Image 1 (cartoon, one colour):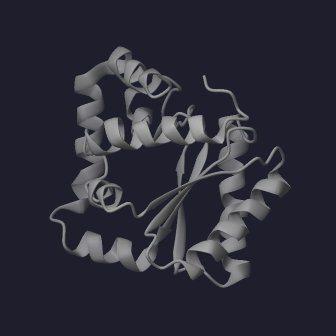
Image 2 (cartoon, one colour):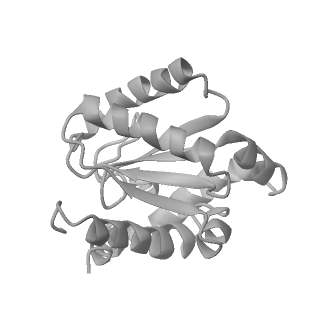
Length: 184
């Protein structure tokens, strides 16, 4: 793993993950265009507490409001919420912040974590790898853009099923290898 004080190395690892896992495996059919157009912001927060992370989230949402050319932000928080259970509980707090800021419906938060686990799955079930990332992060999406992308893409409801089928074909060993390669 990368030095947690080296924001550039952390950003590079996450960028490699977006390129080699999210885009190359087509887990998100909309990500490649945004990556090529440099419309994804990679923001590493030094937060070590949930309160600091919440403040970073608010700052990042405000930043997106003033930078409409940026489509989405990956708010990477490598020093807080390393336990997936704690992270999962924090997502409700993040949603509460969107409501308090009056930006619920304008932005939404998607979740990625190194130990991501969907409900009703075991920790090492292959489908969890669709949302496993090098570091914990909050993905801030513009809802209007997401809705436009979904409207122009056929069968978006099939994306999760295709992704799970792909994870099963690749297998746990290959998926672990792909994640580990993000740190090289």
